[in-house]
Image 1 (tube, helix red, strand yellow):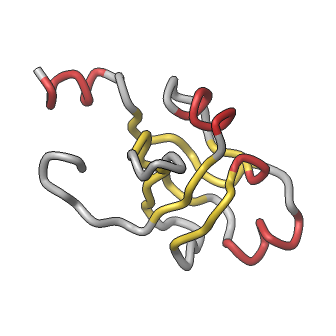
Image 2 (cartoon, rainbow, N blue to C red):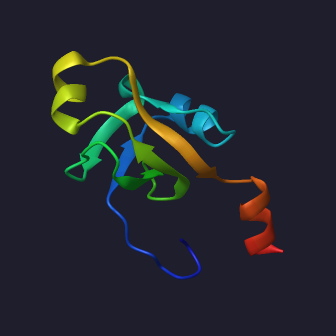
Length: 92
């Protein structure tokens, strides 16, 4: 994502979510501070820090509208994150 400058829709997440998501946890709605996507179920998106650094690639589980309405629950499944085996292979 960084090396190839791949552009994906994304969400900006808070510091607590950054810690969890960057170690492989799924993303929950309360950790999202900004949506920069339509975010429909099944979409592949990035999770970024407030300083615009990508920390994970996620698969959306619920729509943005549902997340905004309910304000809780699991938003996306973590597919790839900073420091996982694929990340290390790409940076090695």
